[in-house]
Every structure is written in C-alpha cells, then in structure tokens.
Image (cartoon, rainbow, N blue to C red; front, side, top):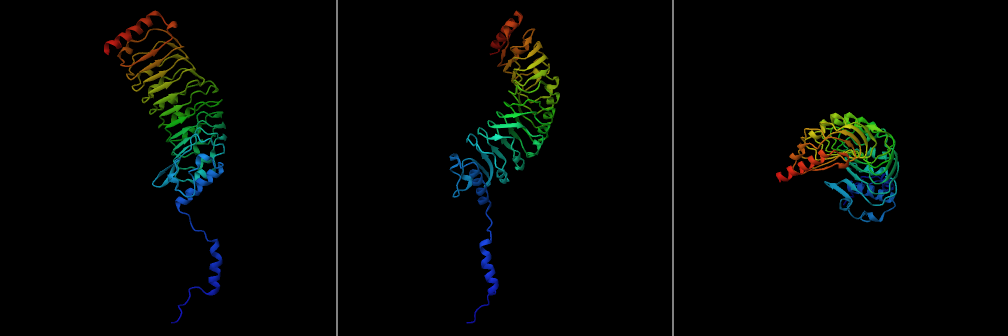
Length: 342
C-alpha cells in the first residue's frame, strides 16, 4: 500500500516541533481568576486565614469569595489582619462589584489603584490605618459606586469636592478621621444619597451646614456628631423628606430649631443635645413617627408643646434644671395624655 503524503515536509516538521515549548495554551476564565487570587495571596505573605485559597479548588468555593454565575463578584476580607498594601492585581478581577477590606492593618495613602476596578459598587476600607488626604480626583472611582466607607482611619485635609461627583452613591461614611479641613457643599449634589456619616471629626475647621444638604431628598440617616459645626441648622432641611434619624449633637450650633424640622413626616429620632440652640420647641409638630428628641445642654426656653401628646411612643430628654417650672408641668401633661391614649 502506498504511503499517504505527509502534510509537513521534514524541515517544516522540525520547525513546528522546536516551536511547541513556546506555545501558550490559553487559561480558562476560572484558571485566570484563580491565578489572580493566588498572586494576591502571595503578595500578602500567604496569610493563614486564606488557607482555603489553593490551586486545586475553584475560587467560588472559597469562603471569602462571592460569585455570580461562576464569576467572582465579591471579596470579603474583613478582620484578616492584613498588613501589606492593596495590590494592583485586585482590579484584574474585572467583574468585582464588592470589596470589603475593613478591620485590617492597611497603611499608607488612599489606594488609588482601585480606580481601575471599573465595576465596583461597594467599597469598605474602614477600621484601618490609612493617612493623608482623600485625593481630589476620587471621582475616578467606579461611576457605579453606591457604598463607600472610609471611617475610623486617619485621613486628613479636606473632603474633596469630587466626592459629590459619584452619581450613584447611596452611602457615604467618613466618620472618625483626622480631617482638619472642611467638607464640600457638593455633597448636596448626591441625589441618591441615603446615609451621610461624618461624625467624630473634631478637627474640621469650624463650618456651617451647607444649605445644599437640604436637597438630599432620599437621605434617611444624617450623623454629624462632634464635627465642629457652627451657625444655624438650615431652614431648608424641610427638603429632607425621607429623613428618619438626625444626630447633630456635640457641636456649636446656635439659633432656633427650624420650624420645618419637626414637620418631617418620617423623622423618628433627633439628637440635638450639647449645642447652643435657643428659643423653644417649634410647633406644629407633624413628625408623628417621633420616638425620641434629645435637646439637653442647650439654651432653650419656653414650654414643651402639647403637640407631643399626639405621639404614641415618645421620649423627650431636656436639661430640666435650666427650664421654667411650666415646662416640667407640661411634660407631666404630655405624659398624662399619652397614658390616657394607651
């Protein structure tokens, strides 16, 4: 039987065989992701907490990993005592939407390498040791970002105006830092914002609450305790139609309580204690969901409005020794009214 012709001449076959060691077989997406994660683990010094990260199991089976349709979308490394820097390769996880690095020992400046995580929606860097300013181009973070927590670090300087250019932001948490500048009115441009937490930043330069904050119609939680606030509470807080929880305690606010404040339909808690507020409790009170008002350690006068007797569950805290007797009598009247309603 005649031999079939070979598709390769001897010289061509020799060339092909010598080339084979240099050919690269493409990795599957799972293999690529595993390689990326194992590289990150190596860069962090192979921490024992990540012992499940190995070459023999799929990343979606690792406890720190969240997957959607077999694609890594979340990385939860809270409280893992990581001391190394955040490696750029973390953004090689192209579908990463959630990154929680809270309660670790990360050092240095704000990790701008995260600008390359283009699909990030949730970022928690709280309870670490970051220092320096939040960069003025922080709006280069993902335009899809909805949640950012940088609380309990040592960030300083100003909160940049660019923070107001993250259009999808729902939660902005900047509490317990060393900010020694100011915060921008542009935060009021975050039309989707639900939670604004800037409490315990006593090194802020004395600053008034920007009237622009009154535009935050979706805001439910406002926490700016001990942040060197001065001036009056803006009258246009009437625009905070979704507000449920307000804490402006331990500041230097003065002037009257805005009449519109206790007309917010959803307001349930108002901490205004330890300021220099004057005047009386404004009426009419239309915040029928109110359960607690704390106005202690101010310079208030007048009486407790009988409107408070309309509230089913309510507690008011006042510095009674500074108030006239008629206030105490009316407080008893409110209590009696509530008792009769129950």
